[in-house]
Image 1 (cartoon, chains in turn orange, yellow):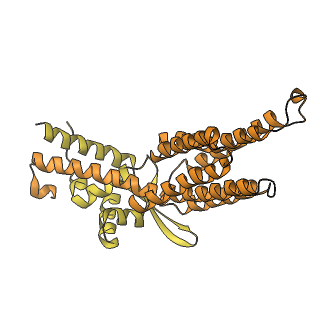
Image 2 (cartoon, chains in turn blue, cyan):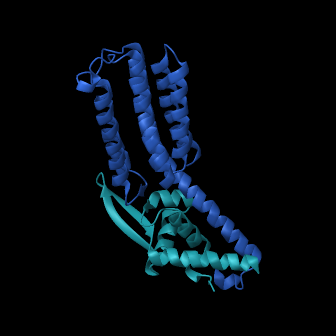
Image 3 (cartoon, chains in turn cyan, brown):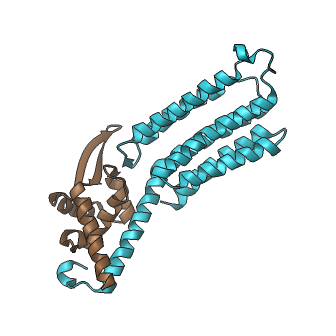
Length: 203
Length: 96
């Protein structure tokens, strides 16, 4: 279909070219999501599943688990971004934005829940109910980041963020004794299944 | 009036430019991923990339990741403008 052989271009050829452009652009976006975003989502899904399952069955034995897994997750994310098939000019800023978001969440969690702060005097201690809400808070913070990220990068981040946020809130209100297991399965599971689905079917 | 771009119009180059236009400006796509997405052999892809690079439509950057050579490609500002012109020309033909 070289221009020298087809000039003047027919309507049918022009339509076929436009359709091909749309198809290739959509396919490329999917391939990029499968190669760069999906492995990161799977990694964080595994981290969620391990950490929340541990919290369900042995809540007080491993206080270091979340910070340790967060460090593994952050290091893994940097590694995956380096090996990603697409290099984005602002990808370091995206990672930095997530770190800032987490730092913000951690600072406010400390300010709101620390039992020694003067304005907390006389207030009830850190109750199981509050622990559940704090867990929901930390589960939805990265999902909020995903939704924001999805507005600029891969759209599937928007849906994944909304889905996991809804699942977390359902668990908060309805999953009584198995709340953390619910978070492990619904949150971690959604991330893993979402990532595997994209990796398998969007390639 | 927008014009059909002779360099972009060749089927393989139209697909290459479409793939690179799917990226955000200044983002770069890995050579191997591009070849796989478009189902083009390395030789075929390389030849078309050279034509596009010589025309100033794409930028080719080589680097090392984990001691392995990697080639990254992106559409230049000129390439993006020509592609958009080309698409506008195709739409005009469809409207006639």
